[in-house]
Amino acid sequence: MNGYNKNDEKEGPWNEYYPNGDLKYKGSYVNGKPHGSWEKYYDNGKIWFKACYTNGKMTGLYEHYDMNGLLRFQTFYRNGNYNGVYNTYSSNGKLYNINYYL
Image 1 (cartoon, rainbow, N blue to C red):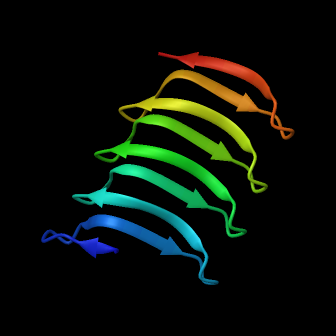
Image 2 (cartoon, rainbow, N blue to C red; image 1 turned 90 degrees about the horizontal axis):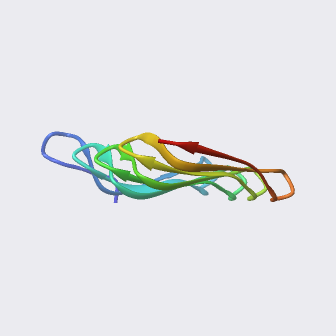
C-alpha cells in the first residue's frame, strides 16, 4: 500500500491514519490522481464521506456525513461538477431540501 510510480506520483491503494492509528481515509491513485472509491473518516471513527473519482475528478454518488455518522447531504458529480439531484438531510436524518444541478 501507499506506493509511488516511476514519476514519483501516488499509485495504487492508499491509506492514511490518524496519530492514534485509526483510519483517516482509504482510496486509490492512478498517476497521482484519486481514482475509484474513496472513504474518509472522522477521528472518532465515523464515516465523513464516500466518493468516487475518475482521473482526479469526482464522478457519481457523493455522500457526506456528520460526526455522529448521520447522512447530511447526498449528490451526484460528473467530471468534478454537481450533476443532478442534491439532497440535504436534517440532524434527525430526514430529507428537508432537494436541489437539482445540470
